[in-house]
Image: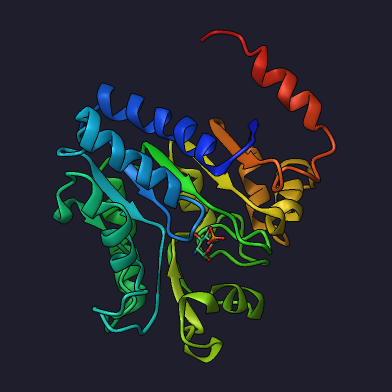
Length: 257
Ligand code: GLP
């Protein structure tokens, strides 16, 4: 794992945007893995700025979303498909038909999950996966006790996550109980991962992610087994890392590729 602790969310957005820009310039039809939540928003804004001011193009890029609430009306503003349309697709020139998301409204959700996995494979897999992390260590919607090999499926949110996400709804009662999410095994197949964590409420999850034992109790710890992952944290989110000064030393003195 490469651990990069930077002062602000904007610094992280620029560093993460460099990764995406390099990929899309070398491979215009790259497959992006898009995450919702507030952590990636400065990154999407920065990519939008590079598109508008510097001509960075996503015209041939393709994308897959990580997860979706079950049962929200297709036009609900918090349905993740609509969040991504608003926060990323509308800022760049990606073709909306090339942005796929798991269905939270299919009659047969299990069959739709299997189709989603097939579509990801047919696209050649995700080239770069953007991730946030939940305060309980979930990634996408893989809550504690998710199998480390899990695939795209319907699952149940913890009360903690429903409380955390209640800020996007009128009340916690409006936060769906069920979601469809790519599994930990699915996410592990992406070729590169960029995880973004900001704010003091993520400090414990980041410390577990980087320094804890690999355990389904902290689902993000499975990422310790990924070959090419960068964890970007701001100082508040990185505050509980025991080896913080060593990660900083490694980052500043990294060998040139
Ligand atoms: C939701 C999403 C996750 C995201 C998490 C953290 O649960 N399903 O993909 O990482 O929220 O969100 P935030 O970045 O807003 O803290």
